[in-house]
Image 1 (spheres, rainbow, N blue to C red):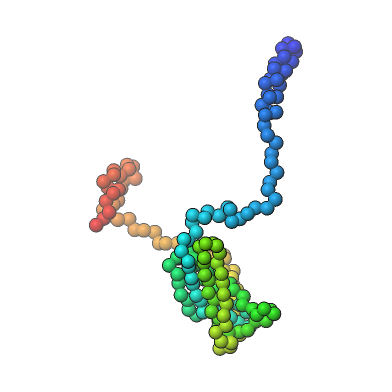
Image 2: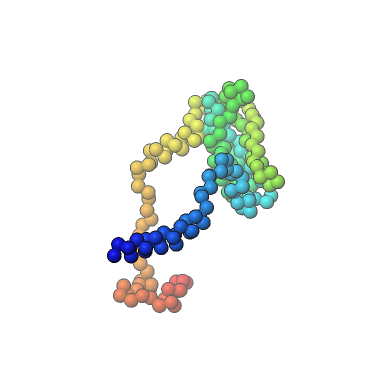
Length: 180
């Protein structure tokens, strides 16, 4: 009996060995990942885009509010640049902050697929230098509301004409009825 088990094990090992030898060893992960190659290029805009914001900055260089803005035709670009403008810190080359009103411009170039941001001081002063930064204010609101339950819509009142017996499913004409 032992001899039969030994032959079966040897035959099984002989059939498995070539398949194990044929598998390739795992390749090591690449050292650096080029993020630009991972992005779907076909989703990027094909036209030049431009947004412009007039913002107030406090004494620390944080944008405290957006006074006005000029939108582009791309809603997603508008949303991204608006969020970036709210989180911006505006400082001079030597690291000083000047409280005042600034113009932030965002220009997207489809050839380079990059966004260029420019900052220009419109006038110093004329703002609350002790105002809280817009990003800090939004975070404080989020912290206050983090344990608050999300508002739910009130339950819809059932329509008398569309009431259905729970014992049987409605037929297609009844489902497709728009109620007009």
